[in-house]
Structures are given as C-alpha cells and as structure tokens.
Length: 102
Image (spheres, rainbow, N blue to C red):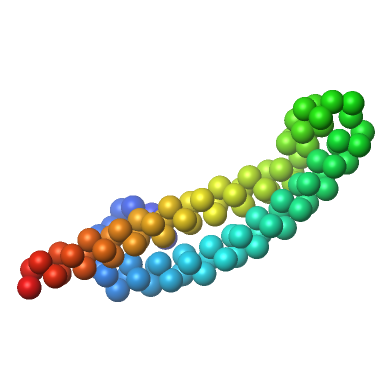
C-alpha cells in the first residue's frame, strides 16, 4: 500500500479502499503495540530489579528482542497514521478538483 500510495495516481475509489484497509490495520497495530509494551515493561522491570542504576537497566532492556518488537510496532503504527493522513489529503484534493471542474 505504501508503494501504491507513493508511486501511483490513485483514483478516488481506490484511495477510499486503501484508507478503509489502513484504518482497520491501525487497530491491529495498536493491539500489537499494547502487547509489545507490556512484554517490554516486564523485561525492563527485571533489569531494574537486578541493576543498581536505572539508566543502565533501561539501556540493557533496550537491547532485548522485546524492545525491538515494541519499536517496530510503534514505527508501524506511525507509518499507518501517516499513510491514512496522506490518503485523506488525496481524497480531499480529488474531491475539490471534481467540484471545480463542474
């Protein structure tokens, strides 16, 4: 979808279809982000319990697969939000062009 939005001139119908799909995907992203944050917080808590300094514990926790999962989920959600905003802009501009051409 990202490539299609970036590289092709979308029809209003196709833009609406992509927007609906991305909106649904955003819900999945938020669910994954919640699960990933919980898993990371458990790892962070373990490191906080075993370290003297909180900053060292945080750094150690940020080297784990749980942190990577959390970052990927967060980055994906941000990308989906940006893509939906782009599609909304495309749809709005296309609607404006149609209105003006009448």
